[in-house]
Amino acid sequence: MSKLKKIVDESRENKIKVIDLSDRGIQNLNEVPGLMLLEHLTHLTMSHNKLAAVPPSIGELVNLQLLNLFNNTIEELPTSLSGLQKLKTLNLGMNRLNHLPRGFGAFPNLEMLDLSYNNLSEQSLPSNFFFITTLRTLYLSDNDFETFPAEIQKLNLLQILALRDNDLISIPKEIGTLDKLKELHIQGNRLTVLPPELGNLDLTGPKNVFKADRNPWVHPILEQFQLGVSHVFEYIRTETYKYLYGRHITADPAPPPKKDDKAKKVSRKPLHNKNK
Image (cartoon, rainbow, N blue to C red):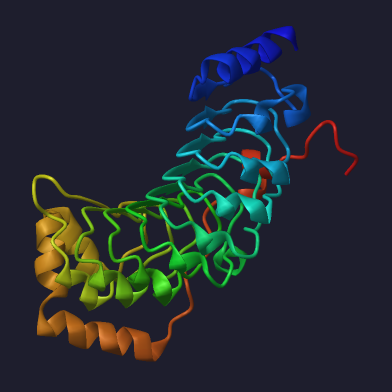
């Protein structure tokens, strides 16, 4: 406690704008008295702790540009979080989030959002989630999405989209409108086909990344993957593929079964200090 108080006192007295409190076993922000009064803070890192909640008073840190809460046990977020007008980087990866609070999409300047390794699905996103049109990087890997909203097209500045290791049975054709996209990670899902509109993107250059392994692709696509990613993109741009894709969608085949038991995820394991 005295060490934490000393850090807060030094920041307040010397106007230190960056605080790193990672890996200190903190379970509650009340253990760090005065932290939420440091309005001058621009960077706050509290990763690798044991925080189960974020207090509404987080909204008092009006100058915060980076908030890193990676690897805690957070289940709830306050609505005041999206009132952080200057926040550009928000890392909430590896927590226990089942939903996001109402109004979460109100961040006016957020550029990087990491929500990977949680328990989120398409039902978890508030109606204004895709209003965060300043986003350039969105990490949603290792969650529980089976489908993904077409509203993704509103994030037209997006350069990196990671949807690896979900339960996706399809990806929206609207991803094909994201002309600034440089990286797309969709490996480890239940995808069998790709929307032809994905061919509008150039994800095969030396500075681009397209990863899509560990999916149960239909045989024609699988053959192209064996030749290389550039062959996949050439193929899905053809009239032949567009015809086959249309037939596949019309047939509406049953989706492939889920591969992994998500109940074993770290984010699902009960906390020892909870009576469940």
